[in-house]
Image (tube, rainbow, N blue to C red; front, side, top):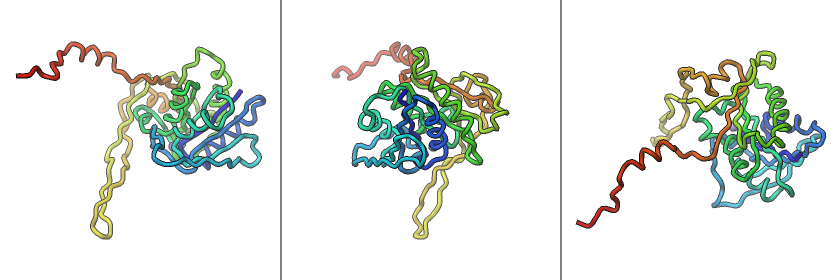
Length: 259
Ligand code: MN
């Protein structure tokens, strides 16, 4: 099995290392890593089209995997891996393990999810996986879960093409099970800090504090609060089908008739 691993926290991130170490222990799994050479969180699905992209083989000490660092975005890394680095297409892609959750509307900003989505767009089954806290993280349980599922999912035609996984950041024995979910809502308050620099010019810093939303039973946000591993299958077609019907009922007289 050919497994491609990437992330958005960068090549030196602990979550990536944990995943690669776990994957490399599986007999018959050939691991290729192409990851950003720096932190690229919240870069969404950006790709680099106005500058060249650097790619160098770095390796991970003692781990039998091909490991590359790239100056590109997470989506660039996946494109490079599939179209330039790997001689044969990967059987599965894992993006992560991200430091911090990617729940609900976070998926629109997430480099972790976008990297998985890029794989899916290129026809490779993919999983994005995130651990839902920022401090004192133990990636071992999430790494086990990701690799165990990937081994099954890669060759199971009924497995969805793109799954977003969030693992609660609690000790393994406190994980309450697995929930299949839909995207919830993540809203942030007080999102922009305005300051003045020493020359009197204003600058801004995007921040934002998570608002605890009402719990909606079948969502990813709710599942992780209940210490469940959340699996949300995502699709690439964002079309609002009810919106199509609503717009189709209107008559767009445009361009208007000449008066
Ligand atoms: Mn990240």
